[in-house]
Length: 253
Image 1 (cartoon, rainbow, N blue to C red):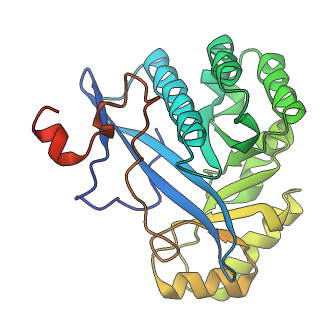
Image 2 (spheres, helix red, strand yellow):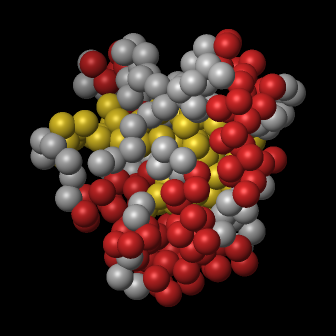
Image 3 (cartoon, rainbow, N blue to C red):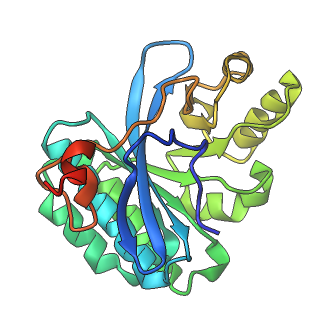
C-alpha cells in the first residue's frame, strides 16, 4: 500500500498536481518542527496517489519528479530545508535518474533530507541501494527511514540495513503516557537516536502534550503547524501544472 498523509489535508488546498491514467497525484508540505521550542527542521514534500495504484515505473517517476520539485524549492528560496521520500524500489531501478537530479542541483543538495521506505525483503540488489546511501553520506545529505510497522522492533532488519540518521513514525493511538514513552524507548533500543525521531500525526493539543512529556523532540501534524500546498516554482517539473494559483488554473492561465 502507498503511504498516506498523517492527516487528511484540508479540502480547500489545491493539492492535486497531476493525473496519470486512473491515478491522481496529490502533494502537500508538512512542516517539521520542534515540540517545545521554535526550532525548525525541514518542510516535507509529501506526495501520494489516489484512485488506481500506479505501476512501479510510474511510482518511480512521481518520486523522482518530487525530488526535482524539492530542489527547485531550495533553489528559489521557498524553503530552508526540504525532505523527500524515495522508495527502495525507485532507488534500485532508477538510480541513474535519481543521481542525475542531484547532479543538476548540486549547489542545494546539502539542504535536502531523504526519507526512504519500502520492504527490505523485496530488494533484489541490496548493494545498489546501499551504495546510494553511502553516496548520500559523502554529500552530507541526512538519510531517514519512514517506520510503518505497528512497533519499532518489527523493523529491525530495515533499520540495520539503512542505518538512518533520523526516523519518522506515526503517533501512538493510545492516550496513555506509557504508550508514548514505550515507543520512544523501543526506538532507542533499536539503535535510533531519540533526538532525531519525528512523531507524525499530532492532530490535537493532547497528543502534542503527550509527545512532549514522553521526550520526543520533533513532530508533524496540524497541532504543530498545518500542512499547505506546495509553493510555486519556476523550475517545476511536468508533473506540477497546479503550481499556478487556483484562480489562474481555473481560468486556464
